[in-house]
Image (cartoon, rainbow, N blue to C red):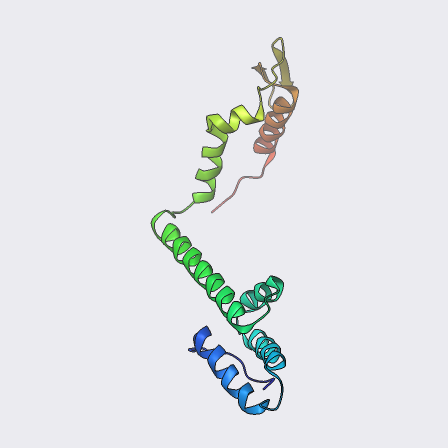
Amino acid sequence: MKTRHQKPEESLQECAFEIQRLNTLAFSDFSATVREMIYLEYFVDGLTDEEIQRTVRMADVQDLKSALLYALKFEAASQASCIDLHKVEEHFFWNNVRNDVDKWCRTCNPCAARKGPRKRTRGRLLLESESAGILLESETSQRTLSKAAYQLRRCLHSPKKTK
C-alpha cells in the first residue's frame, strides 16, 4: 500500500477510489475512523504532483472526501492559470519584450507619480571630460553627469573591433 502512487493517466477521483478499495480489503478488521485516517494518509502520500500533495497536507483535512475536493480545486486552479499563462505568452510575447516592458514602466505616469518628483539642481553644471576634451552642459544631477562621462570615456577608449 505504501508504494501505491497515482498513475500518469489516472485522475484524482480514480486514485482515491482505488486507494479506498485496496484499504478496505487490507484493513477490514479496523474501525471506520481508523480506516478513514489510513485512506487519507495513503491518498496524500500517493499523489504524484508534489505541489498538490503539499497543499493538501497544509490544509489539514480530516477525511478522504475533503482531501479529494481540496486537491481537485487546487488542480483546477493550477491548470487554469497555466492555460491562461500559455495564452498570454502565445499572443503577447515578442523579441526583446523585457526591454519594452522596462521602457514602458519608466515612462508610465502613475509609476512616476508613485516615485515622487525628481530632484533637480538649481543651476547649470559644467563638466569637462579630460579624455574627450569637450564641454558638457546639463541641468541634471551630478550622478547622471558622472555616468555620462564614464560612458563617454569607455566609448572613446574601447578598442575597435576588426572583422
